Image (cartoon, rainbow, N blue to C red; front, top):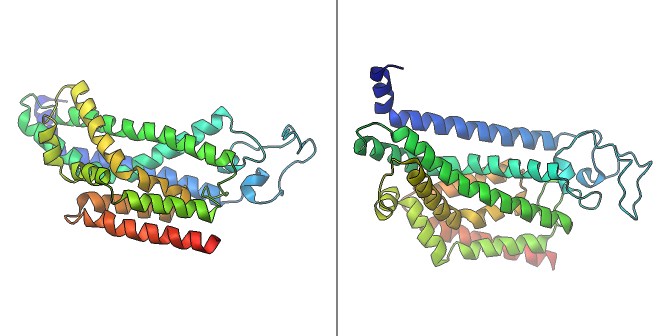
Length: 296
């Protein structure tokens, strides 16, 4: 690429960054939609715990007392395999599969809400850098941001394994206990009102204030990476409780996923964003109390 062409690209840094974010978000959502569709389709054969019955399972060598599944024809790993605690323990491939699912889902959910920060970062970089590195440093910033959510995905995978271990998830990967679901809703609703939530949300709502308070634009890869991690940690502190709600509505419930992603986006981008978590928190707590009251 000639110097003139390169300079033209750098002058359009915001368009380049936005195009990259759109592609990343679309690919992530396409993967999530594919998984959800695949999960909704009947699999053959399928572990009994994943399908709600024993159809499609080779019972010839199954020892229910010792949970010996040597005779089960798995027919390849599928989403149902990770929600069948009564029939087999997770293999390393299951952990890898569920972790990938969570990681891609976090990328799809969080990329739209971090877009204003990334566009500002690229714009500031263009004005601050005479040698023209705003796109590269923005990429490092985004990498640091996503690294935080990758680590969260590891924790979410562990939480899903634990819930599966105690048979607390149904085939849609939602909690089968109304009481547990209600408690999660109440806890998430109360967290929406905490000072920690408010402090983290203010950092996410004010990209300029965040940059100023953290030393401004960084051109060096390591500096941009660390700054992205810092922003990701604020975002995690703001949104982790909302992500826990995926276990209430279903980890692969597309409408539920989209609803949480929209709520996160509104909290970060709407001028009255501090009221949005308070209103949603009241609604979450009320819904949780209603679920518990029905179960008692």
